[in-house]
Image 1 (cartoon, rainbow, N blue to C red):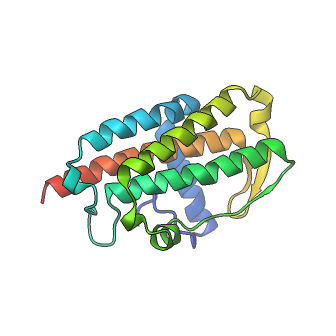
Image 2: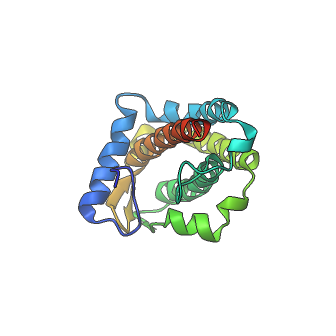
Length: 181
């Protein structure tokens, strides 16, 4: 199993390995700039995928580009809530979520890829605007994540930027796998 696999049933050690790997994708880049650039990067990546390949999974039991886009849009909804509750409340609880259950029960296989990408872009603009206006000291506000413990807004920025980079790479990998068939 890849270190980038983060099932809801992960152990604390597996979850930490995932966090470290995702943060490592960002490196010394500014996470907010990565987040701001992602919608355009996704548009460019998706433009390289043949229209009839958007719904083709990388392999049996894996996601398609459409699934990844829907996941990113739903992740943006989750992050928007987490971001706002952490900025507005004192040490609020944050629940985890099972991305595979969401994919199944929210019918990612029926999603419209272009709609998912547009939803992500609109939500992301609002989140970036909010963060650019947030005083630096407020980025250290924390919430209590059910699986990861204390998590600051600053840490969330890195995690979501790394998450974006992870899935941009996944889209490229899917494109290559599907085109190679």
